[in-house]
Length: 236
Ligand SMILES: *Cc1c(COP(=O)(O)O)cnc(C)c1O
Image 1 (spheres, rainbow, N blue to C red):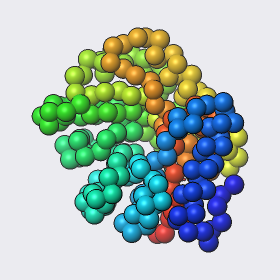
Image 2 (spheres, protein in one colour):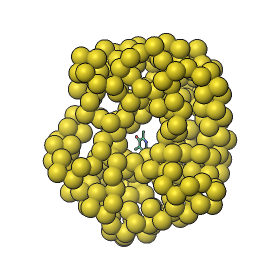
Image 3 (cartoon, rainbow, N blue to C red):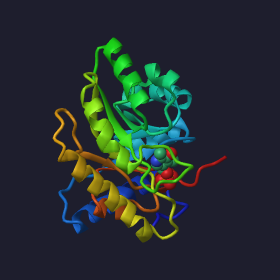
């Protein structure tokens, strides 16, 4: 399924866009309903630029310090930045407003801090709630059963816009075995939207990485986060 290791970034980007389109159609979904987020941790600025020139419009970073010089250097491209890594409270002030969407909000406290900083900045920060869908001790995120309980409090935050859910399921050698986790996230979003809390949307499902994004798309992903498939195996 992967592009050949020797392929150029341009070819990989084109290949991935094709795969996304094919998986979207196979699932009976509308073209364009799945967006590609390039996961750019440890990727050189020049390589990100090549991907953007080849059509990548969204880039996801895990760490603020690593992101800032990239954001500065790639300003002219218009690429939009998402925050996809673990976010510490003391970093929130710098993240708010710079990143269009924060995928990784894993606690009410963090959401409150984002709200506070977004208010100070005079904006409304789009966020996703990270769900620990495999209930793994090693992973961050709300437990599936917790989300319904915190939603009313999140809906009361004026400067936060909850746009949906994100998950990183347990790593499965066989992508097909991740399907039930993707399905569980989609089902959870469908249940949560029934709560009809004003200003909370479940439009976005951020799920699927290089080895399993096609399965994720079949199960309803709207944002897939791909690193290796675009940039090759990470160095270091
Ligand atoms: C690195 C990373 C990805 C991309 O992983 P690949 O397997 O290289 O596609 C996606 N999401 C998050 C949160 C990541 O840290």
